[in-house]
Image (cartoon, rainbow, N blue to C red):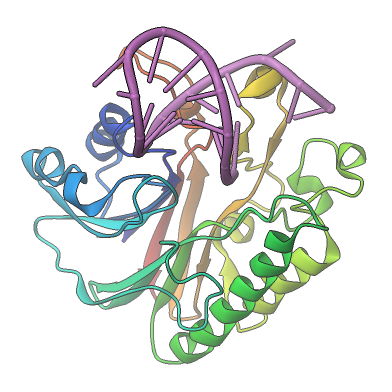
Length: 260
DNA sequence: ATGTCACGCTGGGCGTGA
C-alpha cells in the first residue's frame, strides 16, 4: 500500500497540485489535512474525473480532513471525529478501513503558544487520540498519518536554538506524541530514513523553504502488522512548477507499507 | 525570527488562523 499524507492548506486552492500528486505517485490512499472546505463544495467531481474519490470530515473555513482512494478500493466503516476530543466541531480526525488497513487522517491543533488555552486543548486532543489508538492498535493493521504539529526531536527543527519557549518542541507535546509511539507504533519515516532530515513544513514567510528553515511535524505511524518498505517527503510539491499555482506550506509524506 | 497565504464577508480590505 502506498499511502500519502499531505496538509494541503485548502483543497480548493491546491486542487491542481492534488491532481498532480495523484497522477505522479498513484497512491492507494491519501490522508489530507486542512482541506478548509465545507462538505457542500468539496471537489468530489474533480477527484472522480481522475479515478479517485474522497470521504471527508469538513468544518468549512478551517481544519478539515479526508481520505482519498482510487476507484478500485473501498473505504469501509468510516468514522468522523475523535471520541473525547476537546472541540468536536473542529474537523480533525477521520478514519476508515482501506484494503484491510485501518487508516486515520489527523490534524492536531496547532496550540498557538505554550501558555495559550489552545495549547492545553492540543494536549487533550493528543490524549484522546491515544485512547482511540489504544483500541485500534491491537485490533489489526493500523496507520495514522497527518499533521501532528509536534517536532519529536531537536533535529526535527532547523535550529533548536530558535525554539526557546516555542510551541511544537515542548516536553509536554513531545511526551504526548511519544505516548502514541509507546502503543507500539512506528514512526515510518524515521524507521527507514534514520539519518535523513525529513522536514515536512516550512513557513511561507522569510523565504523559509529556500533557507532550509523547516520542521518535521507530519508523520505516518504504523502498527506492528505493517512493514515500512520506503518513506519519502516530496519537496517538489513545496515549490511552484508548471502547474503554476502556489504550494502548500507542507510537503507530502509518502510511505510504502506491506503486510507483515 | 515573521519578508505569506487562505478563508469568509463583501464587493477591496479586514479579521482570523496558521
